[in-house]
Amino acid sequence: MSIRSKVLSSFKKLHKTRLEVFREDDRALAVARDKINLEFRKNKDEKDTEKISELIQIAEDSEDILRRNVVQGIVREEDKALRLRIRKDVLRSDPMYSLDVKYEVPQKKPNSSDNPS
Image 1 (cartoon, rainbow, N blue to C red):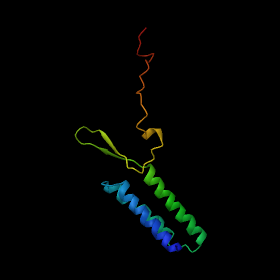
Image 2: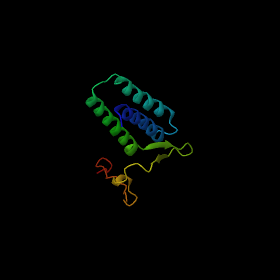
Image 3: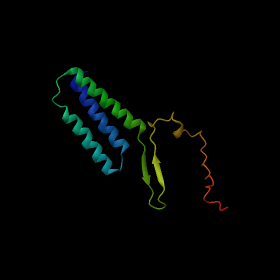
Image 4: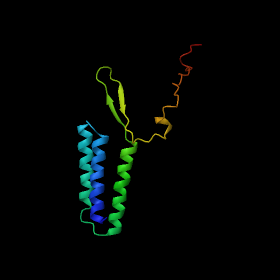
């Protein structure tokens, strides 16, 4: 695959991931689109193939981080609860996302100022 093809492929992949990750969030979609386009435009005249390879790796790593680590939260209007949209690609090896982990809500410790003596 030519270096030009790799650049174009990483550009398209980043935009595809952006559309998935920020689905239905127009503001986030626009900000991510502008940032991706800015970074690629900034380096469009780069001729050094080693530098271009480094930039492609940065784009690929960024796409991976975006795809595997970003979770979209949506506030439900009826009860103002936050609903997380966790995609299949999100890291699930992290205990935070494991369905087997039981979470306990910490009990509030009595404050010495709450106990009049």
